[in-house]
Amino acid sequence: MQRKKRDRGAGFSLVELLVVIAIILIVLTFAIPNFHTAQEAAHETAVVQAIHTLHAAQTQYMSQFGAYATSLAQLGPPASGGPNSRAADLISAALASGQKNGYLFTLTATPNGYNINANPKVYNSTGRRTFFSDQSTIVHQNWGQEPATASSPEFNGGG
Image (cartoon, rainbow, N blue to C red; front, side):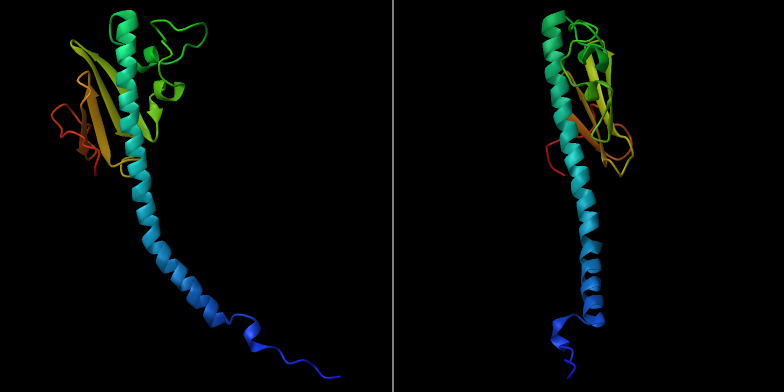
């Protein structure tokens, strides 16, 4: 009986596998930072949308109760029973909790209306910008850890 000779073309050599692994690692070196940047940008876009949602909820709250809500809880769902001025059920429970999309939201009353601040929970991880808005509905941004204010540059939708 003759033994069959092993066909050299049937598999990959160790060198070929190492070259493929090296190429994959090089690609990942470039892809992971880009993925992280894209993820932060997606969070920031969702945060600006949440701010617009809060403006719409404040408009509806004003229409129903004759004043702006002074806290996120007043705009959120009630713990029990139907909607009322203490919990108008105008925003999701997640947004009413003050934490959404890696950001911390605050709503404060002012003599003329309200202020909304959205700051990253972990700066440079969940977001690179802070956001501010008020009853004017203009969204302002700050590239940095300091909370944005009414004097910060306007957010124009870009980076």
